[in-house]
Image 1: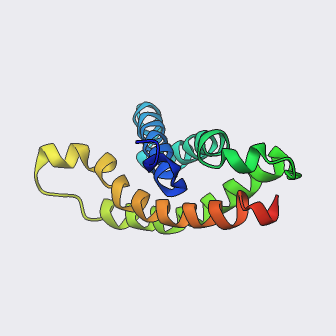
Image 2 (image 1 turned 180 degrees about the vertical axis):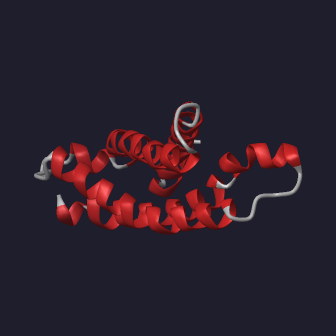
Length: 142
């Protein structure tokens, strides 16, 4: 088990899974008061902030603990959010496309704003990992 968790992509995906729960919970709670698109936008920022902290603490902890670490947390946070915004573009695009084609089934239609999040989040996972691994938490950049 320990050997499996040595891989940063797996740790990143697990953090992303928790981030998805933060995203979904935020989306559900915010959509009580806001339109789905506005709730989706705010939920993204909440989840991205959560993911940065967890990735810094768990996924890329070796980089954080490195004695050569010189990058300030605030700069790292801004880079992480910047990469997340770029990765959010296809995420948001998938969501908008799926929301423009709601299913005919009434039960599925009620869940559609939440189910439509999933494909974009998977695309975002790959892009966010690349940004995080090779830019934000890169040992060469620390």
